[in-house]
Image (cartoon, rainbow, N blue to C red):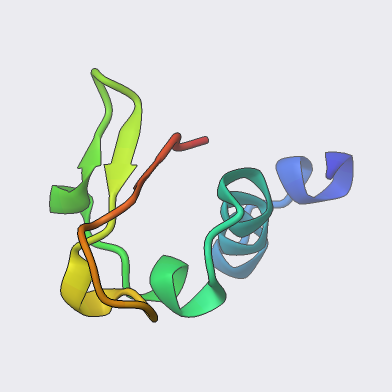
Length: 62
């Protein structure tokens, strides 16, 4: 994780974000800024993008 944190590449940041949020890689790759509330520190994935049916799941962002 330390090496990922030091890396400036987008791929390394995406891998770190995936590890820290326990989200699926596809959810991370398709994330949009409108889904992330930086003030509340919450990332809400829309239900239509999730593997299972149901409401979106909030994940704490990095």
